[in-house]
Image 1: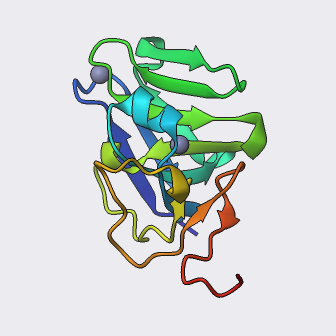
Image 2: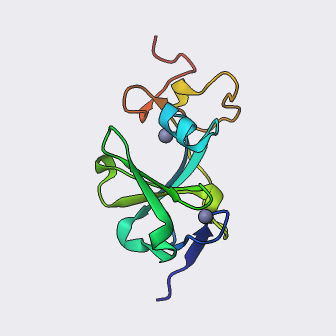
Amino acid sequence: MASEKVAGRCLCGRVCFEAELPPRFVAHCHCENCRRAHGAGVVTWAGFSAGDFRIVAGEERLSRYRTETDATRSFCATCGTTLLFESPRWEGEVHVTVASLLDPLGREPTGHAYADRAPAWCPILDELPRYGGESGTEPLDEEGGSE
Ligand SMILES: [Zn+2]
Ligand SMILES: [Zn+2]
């Protein structure tokens, strides 16, 4: 059975990749590391199984930054577009910036990670479930259901 693919690339087009649909998850991240690394108030990620993801061009242009949490953030060394996130916390997964995709993902974001760290200048304005705490993924109960 032919699987559907999604393609993506950096701004200058040197780094191109593709992944097989569907993604394992799609979510917004409001953590400080994403904010700083991407220069953006929120970063939307799609997670793929590493076996379903391939760099198809520009592998040699992909620069990898190893963070102090042992995660790897990869970006195009020519144009600086932030593309990938990998971490021992999500072994066997590649997280891809939805902003770098060329094709529809066929799936909407389902929640906000690190929602309690969203900066005042980029508030969360929708009704999707919010997660936070130390891990960024613990359910937050903002309706005050369990006081
Ligand atoms: Zn580039
Ligand atoms: Zn993040």
